[in-house]
Image (tube, rainbow, N blue to C red):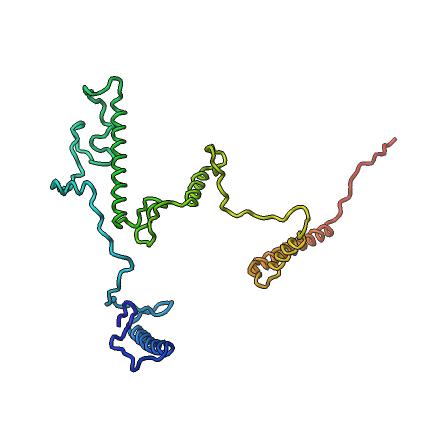
Length: 315
């Protein structure tokens, strides 16, 4: 019994007689499986447990059975061109220091990163050579050479990945192209040629990958408009015609069924509706009460006599 994996087995089990039918074999296997599951349950309940608000918690012992791997063993990567060359020449890889002495500034600087050694920004003057062409900018030439080196390094990196993919040792997180090579570990085979439908889908995605969805982009000569992959919303015709009444009747009946369905009570928040009704009723009651008090107060107030001067003059 392996409690770490919650697994139990009986290596000495054997049938007393050969089962005569498949039903009898299934029944015998179920009986033996029930015994093993009951043994696992008894062993688990016998382990020490700790109390918890959700119930007792049991810590299982470490597993004792080595289970097989889910995926195949990783294949070794094929050596790169530099590794083959270094092995042939006997070149060994030595650990480089992070700090390097810069002869231009006379200080120690980083080998890579910010404020590194031999930085292009730290070179104020470049000596001219006899091979330099007149009128050529040495600084722009230096940048172009660096760009070429970076492109060459990227090309070598992709070439090494292609060789690793051929040997089946490409990492699972690396994929060279969406339709060229499958992800490592999958059973898909690498297609030799993309189909016409796949090319149309990729071209349509690229054409609509703009802010306007490809509406204001310039069309190539002979380019067909991309097919609309989505679903269009259908409306009822404005003018009545054949079958118009039945379509409208079906649509109205469908809406009415949704409203009158017994299971549609979840669409209404009963507590919120009752609260709103009570608040509205309370506001109306307070308003009527204020109106009554204001009218009663106006009745209790004495009426003031108007003291108007008489317009009659004494003679």
